[in-house]
Length: 128
Image 1 (cartoon, rainbow, N blue to C red):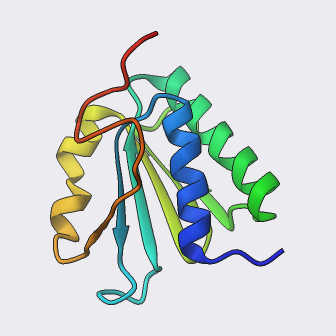
Image 2 (cartoon, one colour):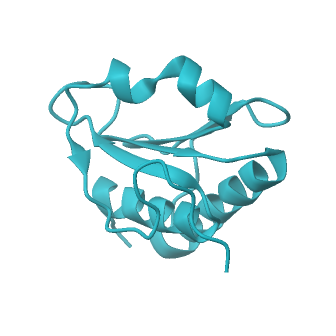
C-alpha cells in the first residue's frame, strides 16, 4: 500500500480530531524546507488526552497507511511530543508549550492545508 505524505498527514489529522485535539494545523513545508513535507500540529489539554491522541494517530496511520513512526521524542511526561514519519512530522503540544514554541510562526512562510475538520482555529471541539 502506497500513500502520499499528504494522505498520511490527513489520516493523522482525522485521528487527532477524533480524539478532540484542539487547533489542528497542517503546514506544507515541501517548498520551504528539506526537513519534511508536512508538519501536523495540534494541542492536547492534558497528559491523558495527549496519550490518547498519540495512540490514536499511531494506530490509524498503521492501519490505514501501513506506516509506523521512524522515531518518537518526548513521550512520558513532556509538554511536546513528536512523531516522525519521515515526510510527515506530527507535533502534539500542551497549550503552554505550543504558545512558547510557536511553530506556526517559525514556519510562517509555509502554507496551511485546509483539512476540513470539525475543530476550527483554536476552538476545542464541543462536548457532546
